[in-house]
Length: 544
Image (tube, rainbow, N blue to C red; front, side, top):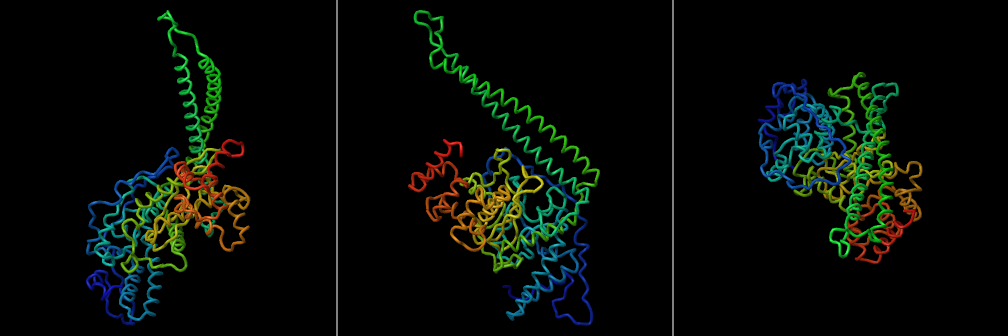
């Protein structure tokens, strides 16, 4: 991979000797303390769920035109390892052995040791994420870039042009940003099966009640807005009808006398009466929703006060970071797969992504926008028969994986408005496929949770599972679904018939294309025309 020894000057700065170590005693640890001072805790912006948002922003600037100079710093590697003590020394030593080893077997052993040591080292860096990280540590967490010279000059320039800040205000996070939000409490820890919280923990109980109350409040506000819009539409219709009634022609021979209402205008009186009934009903429901919202808001304020009294605050929670970091390691393994490349460092040996294949925030947003243009309900959940668009948290993992995963479909304490969580590898062979697999996983888990005990019988998962059983297929039903979902969006949306007839019917019903795509497909093939007609028939019946 790399020819020759690591720069002796860098090794000297680290306090490490590139020559073989004697067995007379332990080597001295490098002194990292003077390289930079104490870090200050920076403010974290919380991205609230905007239930009024209908689409992703258009990416006008995927990369910066002027690259930053962080990767040109000759001390980048030294600063990356600075202030990390024993673990940094171990990473440096193993990296030397791995790079300089000529024997394939020894190299394989050093590679595995380096992977383990690097993750232990990175856990220490992760603890500093809530602080104001220096650039080398920030990009170490974000990209896995330990040493810029491990990459070609062209690739270094590409990474230097990646937009650093979240200018789109979307819930898409690089690893350093995610750990910062977890550590400062603006985002809760991801759920794990291993971590159990004692029921006697009053602070946790209050926080769970607060989450539920906040979800109820947000849902009530969305219903309130929807009912207000409904009443406004009736009022607009009433104005139009009244305006139509006021249109008269003069009586023949009397230019200053208007004629009476026409037969068509008289029929409008009945329509006006119906509109006014609807207005009255909507206004009554609006008042009820307003009461519900005010009560929910009071509950939130009360619980926020109790949470504050019980010790809640914005101080950095190191334990939360440690727990989340272990979760991130599991996410990374799942995105890579058993047979994938688990080497955690960014190197030219493994990096094969072009500008459009790299899992940057902007590329991820663009791909999710494309998915939503075909599957408009991809990021929607229903609450009290109203569809809410809730974009999930997306954690971009610096890994050579090819699979996106859904870690949580939503917060179990706030099913109404909480975001789900998906993880996407930064260096996949096919970025669209990786994101599609994550969205498919999200789709499946949301539908399964919604159906609850009847997930094998009802809805999307029930119908697909029944087909799966009828075909006597073996393996994980969700994996089959994910692959079929990818075909649904990449092939079937373009009238390329790759799915079985039954699966196509299930997806057409439960994962509907946008109306624009449906209109296009119905003219391309009788198969889609028949499915389109079924939609029309269902819309005219009570069972739709």
